[in-house]
Length: 469
Image 1 (cartoon, rainbow, N blue to C red):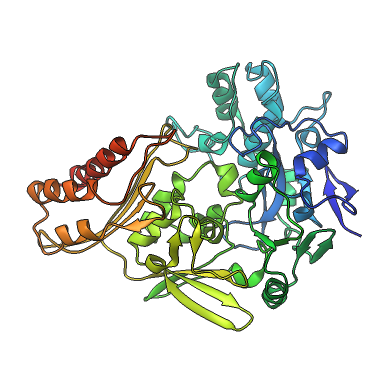
Image 2: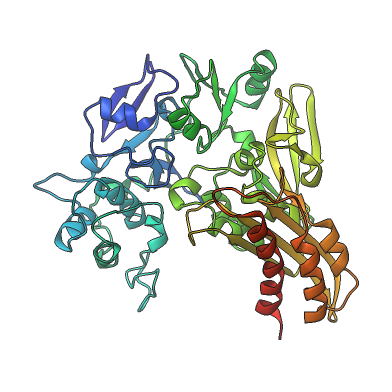
């Protein structure tokens, strides 16, 4: 029997179709607080809380907010979920609900349950402590406003919601959900439901891919979930690899950083702890926390999207991917991995198991993302920079680009225009003209080809302006 614990009560998953998402499953159970707004993970009206292992790798558990419209219900077999209804009751509001109500943070109420769950995850963040006066994005109570960066409100306005967030105290000692963090999160159980399989280990997964090369592999389902919702995509068999232990490793040595392909971006950022500043800068601009709590490097690279944010940063860092099949493993430089629009060297019977970044990394790194919104948006252009400047001369340059060709690319001509030359405004201006001509940008709904080219050149000038004496 497969089941999921929702608000403390087990719910049977047996017979649930593999394309049913958590949101539709919950609403079918009569829990209608979570709503479908965009069906693609941009509005947060569907947010719910799940118990996950602590993102920093410690033995504790933590409450994590996710987009229930994207996650397959079957993927939460054996897991614990709390919805807005489970946080509090009309006669006993949760502190988050009480502050939103008191400070006028809800009007039509459509988005409110999603805000409640995202705010609830931040309310229970174990290392949230009072932090002086705070700033624009951080309250004196330690609340990080980016926690609700993936939640949209169309009628209330964000000031009262922000007021409610910054008014929250710390959980009471007898708070049951706070106490839940002290014990381990439920393990991911092997699952075999109709059309949905969670293998027990990597070997089983790889043999399954060999036998059924047509399967759809999902980790966070932040890409596949959109196809299911908006394009009506269906698969005969979905294989979940997000909790395979072999894909969740993390190690740092003097020569490399090795990241499991199924670590979420939130987990990766927490464990890196600033050791790869370029990756941390990229993650901070990658969609919203709701998405980052599920999205993985393996998934972002595996889709082969030319506008994925991870590839430009990792190309600049000379990263490689490790591919595994039933026959063994092979390592492919990321600069050779992409072969065409949404195609790569990965065979249908292979999985990305690790992403490897060589150390030491360059001393000057940056990630520039040009989009219509500062956060939670798709790139029009993205650029990752990794330069070694010694005694005023560019000794080595690596630049990764996204959004300007059918695949993510290295800006090889610009790298050559920089290497061996003085790090001066004159050198940068000349190289910026070269960078503006890299790739084959097109015009679409996000930007024109001319705009993309102009932004490339300006990006390099911006880098120089930010670091020049």
